[in-house]
Amino acid sequence: MPAAALRTKPSPTQSTAQHPVLFDSPYQPPTKRPLPAGRPRDWYVSHNRRLKAMRLAIALLDSGIYLPAQAHDEAIRDTAAELGMRPPSGTTCHMVRAFMRYSR
Image 1 (tube, rainbow, N blue to C red):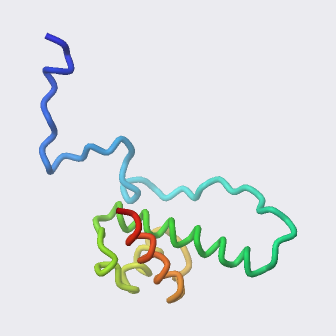
Image 2 (spheres, rainbow, N blue to C red):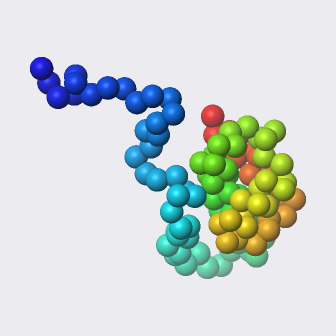
Image 3 (cartoon, one colour):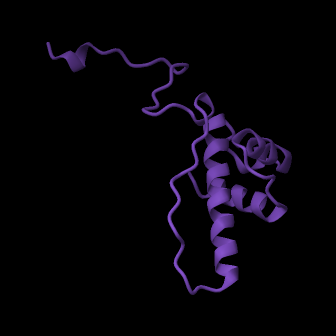
């Protein structure tokens, strides 16, 4: 009998993740690359805001907050504090919920 047939399916309480959950290991910011030169300042501001919102959305999803209605501003700001980020603005919190809405 092949070895794959002998494996049992994990129970719902067991994690099947290939990578550790974000909060299980210390947060490592992604490697930074220089941004393209010559763009308007507003582009850089919105670009950095999108990156921050995406990191927060991923961290919230990893922590078990799956619905945008569950992601209140204080939950998002608490997650940012756990990751060592500055507290996000209301606009960034709105963007986090938008990312979560379209992550399905």
